[in-house]
Image (cartoon, rainbow, N blue to C red; front, side, top):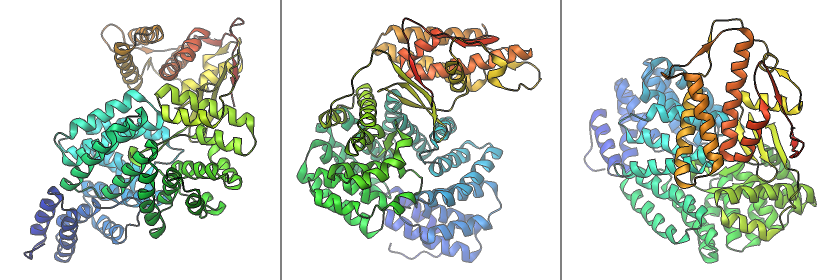
Length: 589
């Protein structure tokens, strides 16, 4: 900052130039001064532009200070819908990044409502990003999946690379949350393609590639990825670059078994977590001190996690992460009292994938820590159940490091002749589905409700009208709605890609079944058909819901998808037909 400027307009230009050159400190100073001058001069549009510029520089996990005050003042003074959307979205992110989701959500709701009225894809993308950031808790995964798809659609044709980058990062994050490997790799590739035109995207391409390579055990690539991220951080303003780089170095050392590397990084984790009171970073310090083989420091970091603190943790993006790290530490040092407190909170979320916000790092699945914690507490039956589930998940996704660590901790559970299959709801609108030892999580779907009802009363006919409940008498309805058609077509495309790699009979059968259903539902010309009578509407509604649910089940467990496809019969009356030669024991909650 050299020559003084006399107008907000000039300062805004300087701020944007500094931002584009990767000089975040100067950019924030110019934006701040521009906001002061514009507000004093009554230059409303420039005032709004300046405070929105300041919002770009907010770091994660820290209190926002005056930023929230400035954003709210501009928001209250604005009547233009576009400005109110941008400011409300910025306020939502401001409080979400400060771990205050309850304060953030009303602003996100306002932004999304206004954006849907305006119909501007750029505004809608901004509002959806804010909505996702404010609904990042453990009970909101189903909503995140839907919003991430909408954001991907809204941002697809936007010229702004940052808007497209946010959409790709949300796709990647949600894919990690549900451990959808094909979608993880597609989203990662999209970020890397964007890096060819954006230095900022290059930072995310390098940093988000790291957990994928650690998952594969490619420790030889970590140093190069850290170097790429460091170089990109010099060319673009990344408010959290320093924190992400510490994460990259710390976890690269942790997974490589580099004791000295962990010891060097653990100090930074501890100092930041303690000085700024950031519970999440303190919990991660537990992990890095574990890698440094310092149980004394692990115990020291765990002391603050009292029952009251754990109960009062914000249920945001960091909730599962904090509990996972704390439980790792408690098991590591044999603190049964703390482990019992955490297990009480974490057990309802069995089968969940634990992701550090924005796919910065992956922390395994909750079944892993729960299995080891139950063993510590002497509950061997629960320990074996969760351990088997975690090992099966790790084997499915190729997480060899995680699998081998867990196998070394204790033997796997014995295999039974009769498969035990879960099909029941969990907290947050989610369902736990799949064979014992290989369960997975799905969002709530009507088809899962129908399958649950049929399996609960095997070999018994239940009318479709009973399954769907009261049916409003109305004109013809579509056999498949637009969202279902899009979903099933995406599934066909996914299967085709998988078949190029692995030509499996189950995949071919699933593809043929989905294609056949699409053909019958849309007709030769691709137009969605409609149906009329009361019973017929119920039949169609139940069938399309069950087909959609079976497609999702078969994505992860082709055996279970095929079993239900063969044994569930739909029509005016529906039934689940048991197979006496191949019995299944259902866990229905």
